[in-house]
Every structure is written in C-alpha cells, then in structure tokens.
Amino acid sequence: MASFWTLFKQFFPPTSKWSLDEIPDLTGKVALVTGGNVGLGKETCKHLLIKGCTVWLAARSKSKAEQAIADLKKETGKEALFLELNLSDLKAVKESAEKFKSQNSALHILICNAGVMTPPIEQITAQGYDLQFGVNALSHFFFIQKLLPLLKATSNSLAETRIVWVASSAQFYFKNPPVNYENLTDTPSRKKLGRQGLYTQSKFITVMLGIYLAKLLAEDQNSNVICICLDPGNIQTELGRNFPPFVATLLTWTILYPVSKGVLTQLYAATTPEAAQYNGKYLRPWARLGEPHPQTKDEVEQKKMWDYCMAAIKDYE
Image 1 (spheres, rainbow, N blue to C red):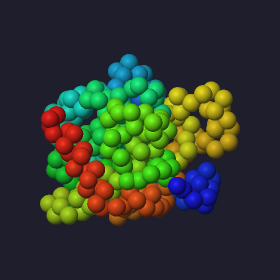
Image 2 (image 1 turned 90 degrees about the vertical axis):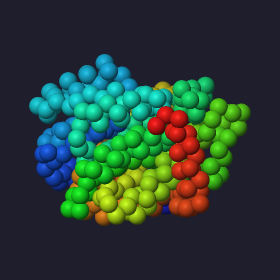
Image 3 (image 1 turned 60 degrees about the vertical axis):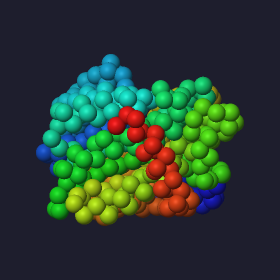
Image 4 (image 1 turned 180 degrees about the horizontal axis):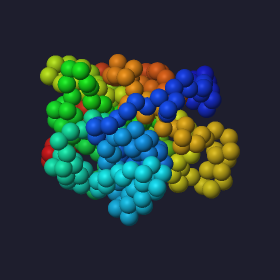
C-alpha cells in the first residue's frame, strides 16, 4: 500500500522542470499511439504532429478515430493516420500489428497509452481474460511483441527507438502481491477482487512486464530499443467514465489535472534526448524519475508473469 508521502506527491506533484515547448524536432520519425482518439492519447498525437512526426493513431472505433484525426488537423494543420486496434481480442491485435508492418518500414516511438478502468465486472476479453488485465497489460504486451522486430530494425547505435508504456499510480494500491493468477481469467476469485482491485492489478502487472522487457532489451547487443514505464498523473480523461457522476465531479474539483499536464511525462519519455538513458526506469508526474511499487521489481515474479503472457499469446502469433 502506498505511503502517505507517496500519495501526497501523487496528488500534488512538484512543478515540472520540462515543458512541451522543449520537444525536439521529430521530422522523419514515425510514432504509433494506442488510444490516440481521446484524452491523453489524442493530446499526445497533437504534440507529435506539431513537431513533424508521422503519427499513427490506433483506436478501436473508426468513426471516433476519424473525428479525432479531423480535430487534430484543424489544430495542427497535419493529418494523423488511422490504425484499427481492438485490444480486447488478441486475434485483432495481431491483425493490427501486421497491417501496420505492411504499411511501414520504420517505427521510432511506440506509446502504449490505451486503457480501461473499472468497467462492469461481467466484461471479459474475447479469449476470456479479465478485461482490465487483457487491455491494459496482455494485449499491449502482445502488440509490443509483434512490433518489436520493426522497432529493433529501425534502431541503430546512434539512435534508439522507444517503447513508452503508460501505467498508473494505481499500482501502489495493489493490496496483495504477488499476483494471484486465478484473478486473470473469469473466475469467482476475480469477481471477489472487484473492479477497482482488478484495475490496480492490471497496472501492477504493466509495470512488472515493462521492467522485465527493459532488462531483455538491455541484454540485446544487436539493437537499441528502450522501454520506459510511467504514471501520467491524476488526469481528467474518459477513463473515469464508469465512476458515479458525483464521484467524477468531486475528483475533478479536487485532485484531477487537465490533459495538457497529463501528456508531459509520456512525451518527455518518448522524445527527449535525456530520456534515452531511462531504459527500465519509472517516471512520475511531471516528467521526473520515480520509483514503482517495490514488488514490481521482484525478478522471479516478473519472469513468471512474462512466461504466462508468452503462453497466452502463443496461439495467436
């Protein structure tokens, strides 16, 4: 459980020493942002476009993505590209990754931004996994695996490519690590854990997988890819759409920050030269180094979760 000081810093982060104006020129680079049609994802796409990046906006809904692309063009004068991505179905995840690779010879930045929070407990993925684990962790894990060869091929000794995996301070609220694997599929124990517990679990797992991925990437001498996990902060986004209205209003008035603040950390991780040294690190609001839940660093549990996810995607590779 998070300490009082950890919670205080989460609710009231220090002023950022970095600003969006410091994003470097990204002309010639290709970025892919999951959940790019709303909230943090859409705002992230906006600033990447402004800096000359070719941006692929990945989303499940074509109509919502097309509206977001039109909005972004009005704001930036530049047009993002749409990639259909349904993170609740591993088969669809593979199809999306394959389509992207068929249309692109390079990928410099992959921002795993999409997520769900506290959906109805009855909702599960097409393969029967808890929806929050499936979308927030497993499907992004699979998406990364399918795109990793392209990320590696794009990198070189002078220029790394980056995976930015958006987690949450919710991982600090995961009450009983290590993970109970029965809670990852549609079981009575999963329902007992509840929607909020399943959300904290999914973000705890995200950080575990991100740290372990970074370790494997560091051991690969033939490529130059890094992975950074981060907490964007307490942000006013559509993630809270499943909250009761009075709760959402109260949070907005008290501890939630605008989307323009929320993108600081992921854009810092994705674009700045100084973040190139942060493979395997965890960033906190706003654009600063932090520490994740201590037990996300348990290498035995990391490997166990990694192997579980690898087995889960095996039939869909």
